[in-house]
Length: 152
Image (cartoon, rainbow, N blue to C red):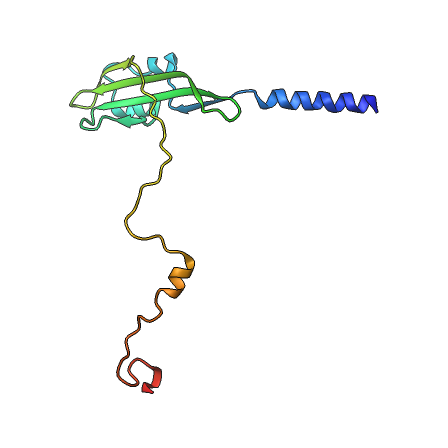
């Protein structure tokens, strides 16, 4: 009995400790130095797409600027994920579609929190009873037989 109790306590302790181990995720396109070395100045858009893949995003008003964004996060238990590492590369093309520059963007990233509010809508929130009973008395009397099957 004592042995069984020790085994159960050990199993419980192991499960508790492994539940707190962080999970690691990689999001986006996380470029390595080897990936960056594959692209040289003067390469075409097709060459870039084959070497690096589709960009994460492009500049809003300039199709000649591509961004490759990747980040690694760790999440423990029920806490929000924490960013461990983030890399952003900016790739600029010339007007004729060849690579002008590829550089890592250094800057302070802003963590925008997700807002879990609901957008208010105009109108009324009707209960089930109000929906069922709301049309009582709203019917107009029409001429005899109008709207009835067979004209009765």
